[in-house]
Image (cartoon, rainbow, N blue to C red; front, side, top):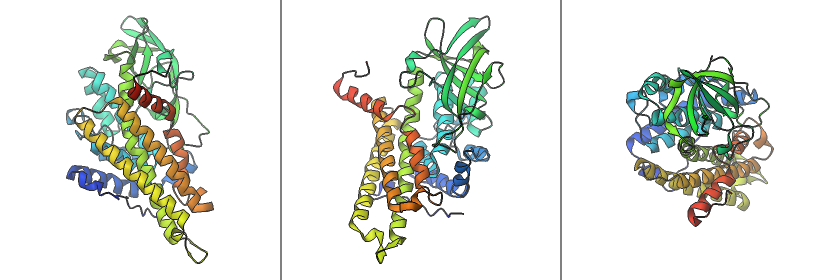
Length: 392
């Protein structure tokens, strides 16, 4: 079993910008990942199985809904603490961070922001502990980057609505107890609705054959005349702004999370470069290797500072969706490039499960795509700086 020797890079002493709560939170999650995730994750990825036994531990750590108020079972933490949690979880594996991100940002967050008081009391405390697990249904087979075109819909039927349609590429779907689903009402308005497992006509077939996020459970949500009580409709969510607000929250977590994967790849490559002997000397002594390492730590440092500043803006309520898009895209691109360069430095060993690099490299292909693709986020930034819409 490979020992987790990770040491976090901090070239510009970014830790000095963090308060005591931030550091304690980060270190607690880091130690948990070293103890509970690192020893098992390669095996679970090879078998393409989600390690469900970690759910209670994630709940105990407060990784589910850390920014949700304590009143509803959340951690009541700030957004930098949340970001650091996601950074450490993804340092372990992107699939593990995805599980926590979905639960907190895409299930608990919309219920807290748009739900009734009764919905908050019913679902949030159990979601915070992991007693309930949730998923988020927005993407459809024919509508990914253009969610406004969704065809999933519901019609009224007395005290219930009848829901029909399908969603795909849904993290946590195969085991989720509830799904926050976005569908059009009879007037064509996008609404959020909580669908519970066990409702007749609601199924969650698992997506098989993935080469990425193999330790994360992915599936579909299929609705065949599902009768859902009207009381399960989120009363304050009307229009596309609802799901897009949730996506901004999730993208913020990804910005920090992808950076965690980059840190792990860099740390692995640095250690290997000092130990691997070729031509009578460590490969870290060669110019091309030092070039790669120097560029890695530079990009990591820039992303650390960008994420920290974004966290400050989030805490002040000033972060814009466009700023979050920039950070998400940047961290994903940085992490993917670092993973690929780290793989080349490890040579043939880089493709084995003895090291984490190839696993991160495959995972990051998904992270670059979900919650808005690399290209979509470029266009969001482009529209923000020019004022011109290139989407249509």
